[in-house]
Length: 215
Image (tube, rainbow, N blue to C red; front, side, top):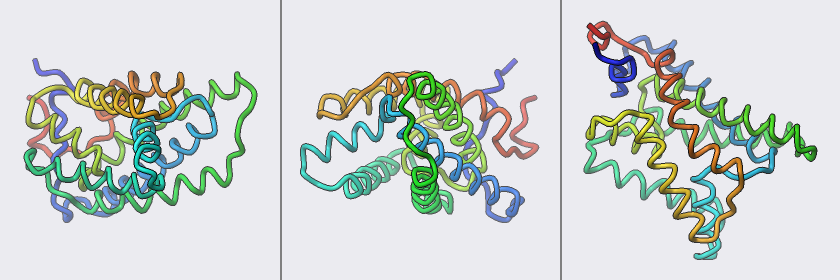
């Protein structure tokens, strides 16, 4: 019998398929994702792997953090071409909603200095990030640049989301660290946990059609 994870189809659905509920799921997931990023920053125990890479590249090239983030996103979108991935409304919304959500979270959430509070906030942020990723990717309105790489590799290789996501995060983390990005315990925990968390929550969050259901 096929496993639950093997039955999750992450390919985009037409916008006319349950548009209101799926668009709401997309926006909610992106807002939660941005909030989780802000919480991880406030925990002060390490950046997520992509931001470690952004920081390392910024230090090497002398560019701003935002410019490096845009450059990395463009490069990742180019990697979609051999994977035959197509951008969708979720790809555009990813950039806008996450930016607003993370800035709002940072404005409303003060830094946490006590270690127990930092650990609790770090763990909550990572779990929330896994939920948020599953929710907005599961809306099937087009993933963000980095998650499109994950779903494209998942579709082309047949590897599980857990394996693909973890492999990407570990590679990005290693590259960022070698470039001089800051790594902490939160970084390592995120890299190891985000793949399994995303795959677990996709079982509940992914929008399915009848043809997508397991026999």
